[in-house]
Length: 192
Image (tube, rainbow, N blue to C red; front, top):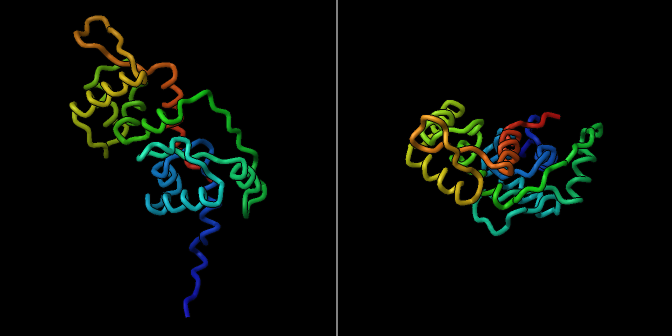
């Protein structure tokens, strides 16, 4: 006879906990970080929530970094709060965002570059700043230049000339400042 361990959450409790983390669109990787679970567990939770009509994919054409957000049914379920009926309403107020492009930025190197660009920086300084913020990051100067080049093509960064500097520095565009804020908030877990 198998006895149930009361300290382990049931599948339904895990779904409720996962649903509560959706204060903004998230990838499975971001959800795994917030819940402090493995990527495979977070992916299973996302598939289950989507199957029940609580989440929808905002960039279904993407093969990686799929971004999920609440459906109307998901918002209602989030507000009902499962076992905790006293949840306050979460405000879902976002500027106009190009969600497929934001999903593209939800990659370890790209998000590290965006988080590092708090002021105009040349690629070597971007890399150093990213490594200071995330010591586990593995990024070469070549990786950083390639990421910056791709971001420039997509309109996420723009070059700026700094006095006395032979090479251009890069800064975020207005739209990508919203990406930076969302990426930073994606790291914040919601404890309820």
